Length: 110
Picture 1 (cartoon, rainbow, N blue to C red):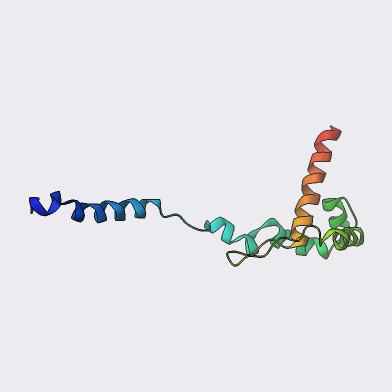
Picture 2 (cartoon, rainbow, N blue to C red):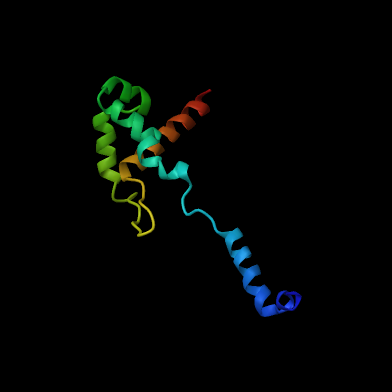
């Protein structure tokens, strides 16, 4: 038995298998795979669309103005589509950018 374990041809596949198994990673973490159903955009945005006053307060822009802005820039911010995973929509990207800009403006005003 000691002769077989000392043989490099027997040990190398075992070591390579252990090394490969250790390096295997997830393609997409579970928190990111749930983005389509559990994100702020997926849960809050549909509710904001039904209440113009809350949408105005949240986005700091009226709903028609937001959609007009989105229609104006959606072809410039359109993500590239791949076979690996779905990209975020232009509306979600615009919504997130508007939210971040409003937070930045609020911080700068103080």
